[in-house]
Structure formats: structure tokens, C-alpha cells
Image 1 (cartoon, helix red, strand yellow):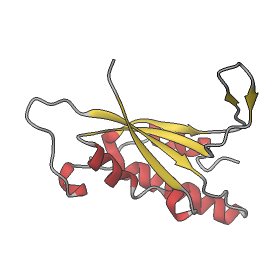
Image 2 (cartoon, one colour):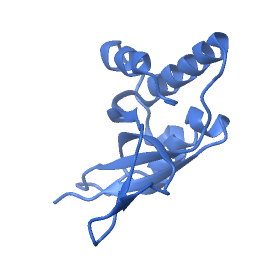
Image 3 (cartoon, rainbow, N blue to C red):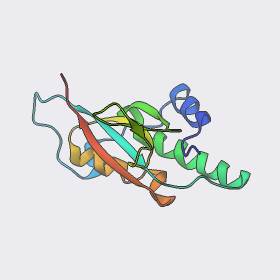
Length: 138
């Protein structure tokens, strides 16, 4: 079941941004002059789906509030993941074992800043983890 409801993605992408997140907010150094900001994939693992309507509403609010604090750092609010499979080198497939439950993409000055921004992710309060990966430009 999804931990990132569609309503959150619509609200965040359609609504006004509350404020920009700055390097100072995360307490890390910014980029070297002339260095471009990078994109970072936040891969959500685990977490749990709220069981009652009230808990689901609270979870949606938590995601919306967190996305609101990220401001223009959001490149793609992402999507939750559903069923999955892992394709092997011989072409066979079996159940995926990574346990990923969704993703988002942020823009940040550094991996350190992206990780600091990820620290506020609601999946953490639901018992999950967030893995942060730099997306390398090709």
C-alpha cells in the first residue's frame, strides 16, 4: 500500500511554495562558486500505511507539510511503488528484495545537504528509511 498518496503529489505540485529551503537551514556548506547543484533520488524503504481514516489524514498532512518545507528543492515529488519484480541476468524474474516503497527527487548543493533534507521525511516516523543517491549527469 502507498505511503505517498496521490492527493499529496497534486497538492504540492499545484499549490504555492511556502518558502525556499536554504543551505543554512540544513547547517552544511554550500557549493563552490560555479559548481552546479545536483539532483538526488530519495528512495523510501518500508514504513507503514496508516490504518484509520484519521491516521491517513494525519499522514497526508505530514507529507504535505514536509514537501512544503522543501520549496524549490523539489524536482519531482515522486510516486509510491506497487508490485515489483527483479529481472535476473538469465532473463528470469522473481520478487524484488529491495523493499522500496517510493521515491522523490530533490535538488541540493551536496549529498550531505540532500541527506539533511531527507531527515524530515515522514516515512522515518512510520518506521521506514530513506536512502539518498546522487543522480549523475550524463
